[in-house]
Amino acid sequence: MALSRVCWARSAVWGSAVTPGHFVTRRLQLGRSGLAWGAPRYLFPRQLLIRHFWTPKQQTDFLDIYHAFRKQSHPEIISYLEKVIPLISDAGLRWRLTDLCTKIQRGTHPAIHDILALRECFSNHPLGMNQLQALHVKALSRAMLLTSYLPPPLLRHRLKTHTTVIHQLDKALAKLGIGQLTAQEVKSACYLRGLNSTHIGEDRCRTWLGEWLQISCSLKAELSLLLHNVVLLSTNYLGTRR
Image 1 (spheres, rainbow, N blue to C red):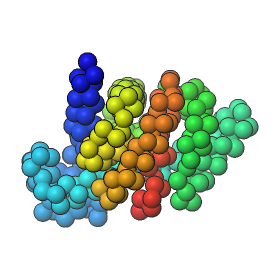
Image 2: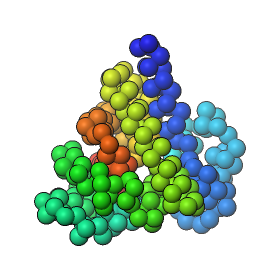
Image 3: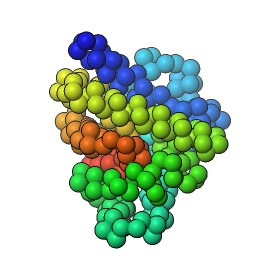
Image 4: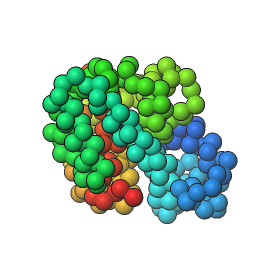
């Protein structure tokens, strides 16, 4: 039983860490201009070869490209959080969310307690999963490398499903222990949760993953906060904001 849980957790963090949504794949196939998409010579290996056959340099380049795409939605998501602040009835929570958004915009990596203090905001109106506005949901979908070209109810359902799976994986990883993961498994787990781990050392990745798990395992029904954590916890970690 324990062995099966270990194998399931490891295969999950490894296998799903870099699977882009159809929208990302289509955008890259169309070859739209911009530095985020890399040089044209990279298009064919990324689209036609599975990850196992990428060279080490291609792995780094492709993961950078995918992360650059999802990172484009980060400022938009922060702006949506700012827009709903006046709708929060509790003055203390309004101040905490304002402070958190300001810290992220100024390049500060938030502390765990800064994020967990906002659980109530993300469990119901105005930031609960069922209360998020359509454009907000679309931006979150792009941050998760999921297509945003679906009706909002379907996007919301997909985000709930993906976030629930990540939450379950987090519980399994917490039981397994980060120390049981290989360096590559740790980096893959971080990438899946929003951090571009390709240029960060193993120890720093383990530290970040520990922060993520501490937040995730403190949550119950606040899936919206865990989803937003993809942005909140990754944007400024060790100067990754660029």
